Every structure is written in C-alpha cells, then in structure tokens.
Amino acid sequence: MTFIGRFRYHHRVFTGEVFEGKVHSTLGGKEYRLEDLKVLPPCTPTKIVCVGCNYVEHAKELNERIPEEPILFLKPPSSLLASGDGIVYPKQSQRVDYEAELAVVIGRRTRHVKADKAKSHIMGYTCFNDVTARDLQRKDIQWTRAKSFDTFSPVGPFIATDVDPLSIGIKSRLNGKIMQDSNTGDMIFNVYKLVEFISGVMTLEAGDVIATGTPPGVGPMKPGDVVEVEIESIGTLKNKVVS
Image (spheres, rainbow, N blue to C red):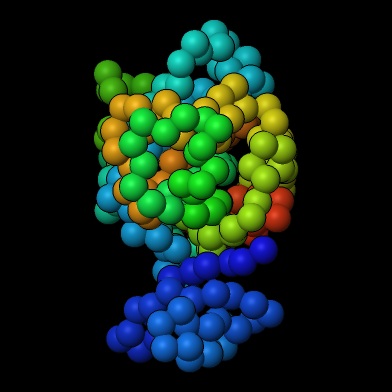
C-alpha cells in the first residue's frame, strides 16, 4: 500500500509518498523527514461531492426512510482543512457536529462510468470530517450554508492506495472517547455505485473528493474539543475545534 500526501517545506509545496516517517518527493526524488514538513490537504479538488444518509443504521437513527438514490450535496474547496489544523467554530452557529466519513479521491477525469469500471478511476481513499452547523442545517431549506464554512472539510492526513473500501472499519473519537464505530459494509450505496451515480450527473476531475456519508453517532463539539476520524488501513485525521 502507498500513502500519498501534499506538503509544504518553507515556501515549496509538493506531493510525496510517506513511508516510516519520511516523505519521498514525487518530483525530484528528494527525501524529507515528515516532522520537518507542514502537512496539507492531500489533494486539490475542483469540488467536494457529499452523500447524505448513506448508512443503514444512520438512516434508522434519523428515523429516515432508506433512500432509493444517493442524496447529493456539494461543499466548496475553500472549506478544506488539513489534519492538525483548527476547525473554526462559526459565530453564526450554536451547534456544530462532527461526521466521520470515508472519502474517495478521483484519479482521472470520470464521466458516465459504470460501477464495475469505477475502481480504475479512483486514486485512493482518505479520512473526511463533514463538519456541519446542525442548527443552520435545520433552519435553511438547503444545506449549503451549514456545510460550507471555512475549515468545515477536514481531510487526510494522506491518501491510501490499494484499499478495499467495501468493508473497512470507521470510527470517530471526541476527546479520546469513541462516538462512532461502524463499517463501510453498512453503506446503502457502496463506493463504486456512488462513482457511477455521481459521474452520471457531473464530470469528476482528478483530485475531486467524494465524501461517502457518515455512520450513526454524530454529535456536537465545542471549542477546545479534539475530534478524530480513524479509518482502518487508511489512518487518523485529527483536528482541534477553535473559536
């Protein structure tokens, strides 16, 4: 398995492969110590496509019917946040929630791709936190404001390749306490079906992110809290909430 990330060293931004605490630049071949680098979001998407209500048990938790088709919404790239950086609690909201999710990172332009061909269009997978201003989501007719604040899309730390996304564990922790503990096998629409459905609606570009929905157990966080999203074989995304 390969882990791919984006990093800053002084004023230079580059992509590299991570192995045993070292980063090997994919351009130029130079090697760095991970501790000497600033970790950035691992990709630069033109869009972040999110899926609502995509776990059976989460639908039950919300007393929602199982959807017949994926429920889609978008988050802007301006909401991206790297692992280790602070989630800013907006003044407009009185309740901000964590939502642990598996994210798909697209590897090449993808349009009208069938599920059985989707794997070849995926670069890899990473952790995602679909941070949501829950009170604003309930207030507004659509979800754009509640989902789109700057820092509301923590992603990373790295992209893992060669992962089987159909049955891997996914957890969230709040201040070290497990809040969500599920498996992607509980998804209503699996990764490959999502790529088929979404690419039938819009062209996906290399680096685009699909956030595949959250399992049950979402809840509020407040300034000072530390939230982690851990996905089996992929890694742990960790952020502190700041005011």
